[in-house]
Length: 160
Image (tube, rainbow, N blue to C red):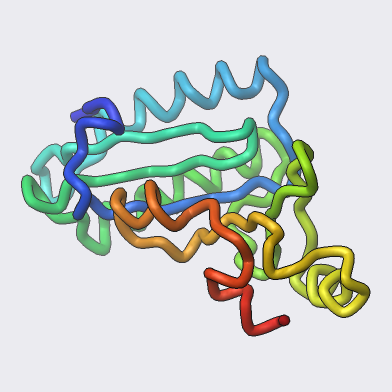
């Protein structure tokens, strides 16, 4: 069952998928339609999940579930991964590779393999003040407070 993202409690679980490229406006429109349909039908052991999604910066897909109503289970999480894999194939993008870093360079959003990000740190092309997307956040509250943070305040800090 779809509910607006802003109506989810702070403890609601989130999963963040970052694309290796920006989606076009047409793709975003299609993805939004597909996401809404998926979330409407998303269930755990036959019980509908109270869930939502966000599309951010034409690059990130965020899924969320209110665990207080019905917890996501292994099977329901698997179905969401299968859905994301379907989007990867349909749009020829990479959404599941966790060895990439997405960060802001001014108003531009950059996406680099982790090894390239480390090199940029060494070359001082990015600093601890560079805004990174911390896709390791686990719930809505963390997403709202600690998703877009200076690299020094996230797991990326180990590279400085």
